Length: 353
Ligand code: COI
Picture (tube, rainbow, N blue to C red):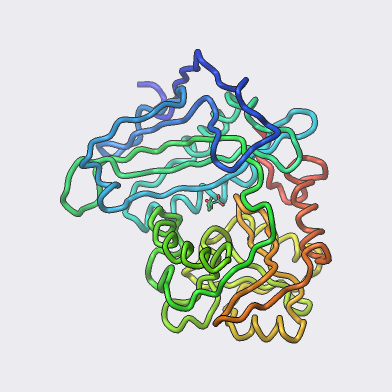
């Protein structure tokens, strides 16, 4: 018997690299030449392979389509000026993926498939990692239930896939966000901390309503009283309140890797950081009295996107000009320099391919 995690490789005969316009990258529209695919059946991961990107065929009874056992991750890889490719903190996404899997009664992935498979895939498609400033390779690992059965039970079989593609910014302007006080993203004891497909589906309708009012995104609040701030759905939220960097710490919030990294960098610079409950009232009061000096969304796709305005109960609260925010500017430059290999990787966050 060979190594059960031996990853077979079939290279494409039909690369579309030449058709990619690296100077005009939108988020999530271009996909690289290859994908990694693994199947879970009879209690084990098998048939792990890197193959040309292609459609997959599934039964209409595939249980993920009916009962929602579907989880994913978002990771980015960057190109240094000498051509070296580096993946940013995939170990954190690996841990979170397996926490999501456990909550949805799905099998966990071994590191040899998630991390080693990812490195092998990126090495094969490294020509798709952009070298222009602000661009990166977005990596989307995901898993879904594949059993063709209509009974409600954990599926017996699953598919794990990693696809990738070069991307530019997810948001290309500061955000106007609305504090959502009617709809709910997640309740205590639910699945808010996990990165499952349903958490994104439920946000679409409330987000569209907010967009019709001229907002870009929502600030979700707690399910019980709508008094405490949670996250933006597409990213975590971080505020500079006085001399302290704060981020909501509820169990219903996704444990974002970018947010965590920003809090760790701030700490290393001697800035006070707090991960705790933040009430809407505290935020609004802080904007009104000038003690909230910075606010931003932090996520893999969003990176760090400044928040320019917050809507709450029909009123608009304007924040400082994003161009004049010292912490946000300094931390985004530091993170970029680290990820593009321009400064020492003091935290050991770059996984070289
Ligand atoms: C990410 O930041 O990677 C996400 O998965 C969020 C999604 C809105 C693109």
